[in-house]
Image 1 (tube, rainbow, N blue to C red):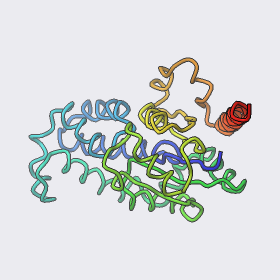
Image 2 (spheres, rainbow, N blue to C red):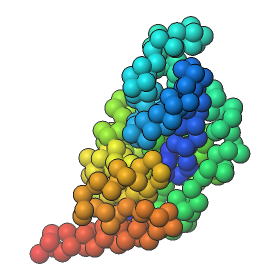
Image 3 (tube, rainbow, N blue to C red):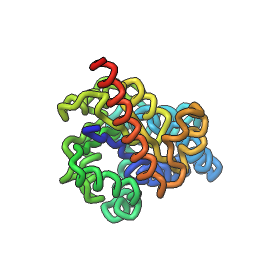
Length: 256
């Protein structure tokens, strides 16, 4: 196991929680309905792991918001309602919720500690995220990880988002590491599917948005999911040990 590639949103930092609050506030303002805000928060959990476009499109469709986004489309000079909603959310997010201080407070200490400890042990550590690269670098700088990362690959660097494996394969190529020598750290079934398709080992750490969905993963894979954040290091160590054992078995087979 030569490298670890971390997802960012919901894995290293609770940006999902911060973004959902921004979306909820925007929806309430636009629709004038507290019940719509609650519905937006529920829907956000369903769409976790998608790109900003995928998530915003889902909210617009499910909440029938196209008609309320005309002024915002004119304000931002965009043609699609999802784009206007995402821009409204982003402006509120960076000004109120996703500030540097807010991001530091929202960092997940056990995931950050895992990234640091693996780096200190000599493994290459990178981030591959459904956020755009510039935003990812801003977040990672705020939580103190940017300088130790060998690569940061955002959704704008690939053509196909998760669950397609492209982003993980591109990141591994940037690192000069073969997929079987990589472990991915994720928080959602969408991310796990991308790691599987890339031919990489993976572990997952649950959060409030993804815990229920992760419990629907195959029974044999549940050992690689940490439902308690403090268990993440133990789960990751077990996965690395299992990968080493698999590698030795393959070498024995080849030598025989």
